[in-house]
Amino acid sequence: MAEFKDKTVLITGGTRGIGRACAALFAREGANVAMCGRSAASAEQAAAEISAETGGTVAGYEADIGNGDAVDAMVKKVSERFGPVYVLVNNAGITRDNLLMRMKPADWSTVIETNLTGAFNCCRAVARDMVKQRQGRIINISSIIGIRGQGGQTNYAAAKAGLIGFSKSLAQELASRNITVNVVAPGYIETDMTAVLGDDVKAMLLEKIPLRRQGTGEDIAAAVRYFASDGASYVTGAVLQVDGGLAM
Image (cartoon, rainbow, N blue to C red; front, side, top):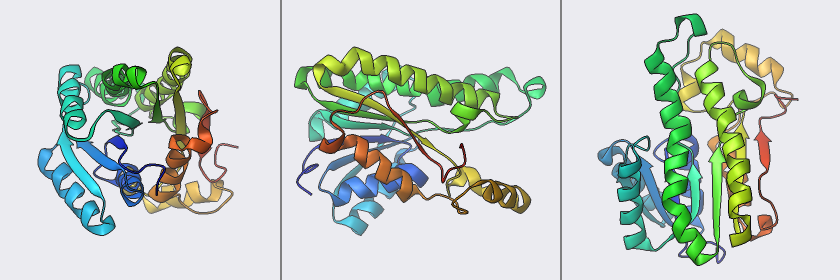
């Protein structure tokens, strides 16, 4: 509890799935949790629900993370209320799947903007205060798709692979200021994004997973917590695959 007591944790894409699980975990451990979503109503509702469940301090904020000015304004509000961001979890992500020859340029641009440019905007917005404080933890949520690729997801794979390279480079830039930057690469996790898959696809995926189960948001939240913890103070630029062995 004491490790994150009163520290400011900002989570993008925090209203559902992995982000919500992360928000609940940090709220239980005494952090001041700011959840960012595209809709103010959904972010505030999710924050109220998690606060009621955990007894923690959780607030919802609206921002289009692909818009740098919107992110700067959101981070300013969070900092004014809770203090400088100590832990940033870049979790927001979308898919617009299709074969390359059928993919619309807008679907390429939208996925890159949200999944990669969004992380850039958020990191840039919190980095200055982290440098001043000489402390901070940035955890970027990539995907095993960014490591091994997947047909029909060239846009998503490009964004998630780019996020890994981005994180390793940023880790080198910020290390001298006691700020770590690490990556969690989830596999097949129970989220709204995977819920749309057909039963045959789900069965096929489970056959490929050595642990023979889907992961949960809580599995990913535990990995995020590790990177945010004092126990990971000597870990930066790392990529942790949390996938039940799928990418072996």
